[in-house]
Length: 355
Image 1: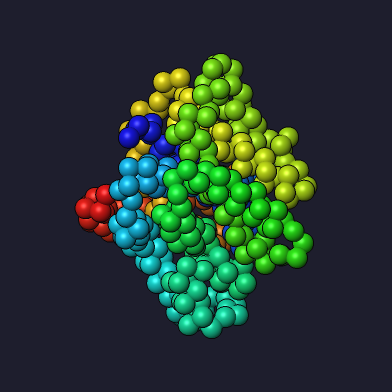
Image 2 (image 1 turned 90 degrees about the vertical axis):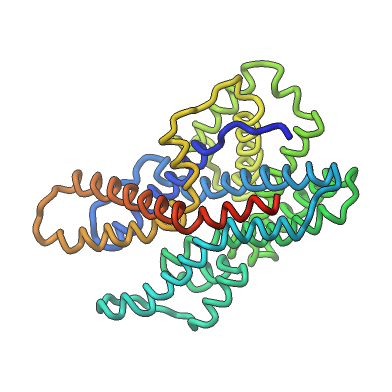
């Protein structure tokens, strides 16, 4: 198997975009100073979509290669996914319900829950946290799980699909599914798909890019140095400006699909031997799953801490914004590091037995 370059720096960049997107929102809701003027502060959803493309790219590539040599096991695939995803995921589920149902009432902090706890638990455990999130908006700690639900649903669908398809038909079928589903998703009669963000086309498109590379169909992208340079420039423009932002949803999603897929292909196969070797940055990317899951917990701690300090007038608005950002990042990384070392690592070691 051709080993991909280190993608951890990209993961850390994307999770950072999510954090700086959520920071101003909670600060604003609690009456604290905030800053979100630059476009990069409003790219949290887009960062999650690139995560989806990246996941589809990696997962479908693995399944496709194993399918080619007839070594793909659905059982082992699901065991590995459960061992990777569920330990920290379930921890956040448990803490989230305790936080909103027990801790906030105990602290006499008002929070309106408009759902039955059992319904919420069932939806989050049985792979539908996106429905729970966008139907009830149960609070940030639980709402952040929506994207993990999309990935879980994707894994449930993609593994048996590729397993039962003939090898020669995999690419054709995936292309047809993406095209048809993309149209259905944006069709007016299927509003529930958009309401609950069933954006499977991002993951599937990432997989299509991976298979096209495996088949040698993307060699033309490597012919000229200007091509990867252009793709990287366009991706930078996408995240740091509004030049590629359109009001029409299907145009935005089409641009994101194509651009993210090409960008991930570029840094994976057409990076001209440019590799980031900074150990700190790579480690932050390695624990990015934990940073993503725990950052809303860290944000709540920091914001409510500053609400208590606000009466003392210790900091002006500028320093308050800086401190909230720095402390949230630091606490998120700390939680993720502890989780990775003491919770996730034992399961990751077990995961290697099911390669």
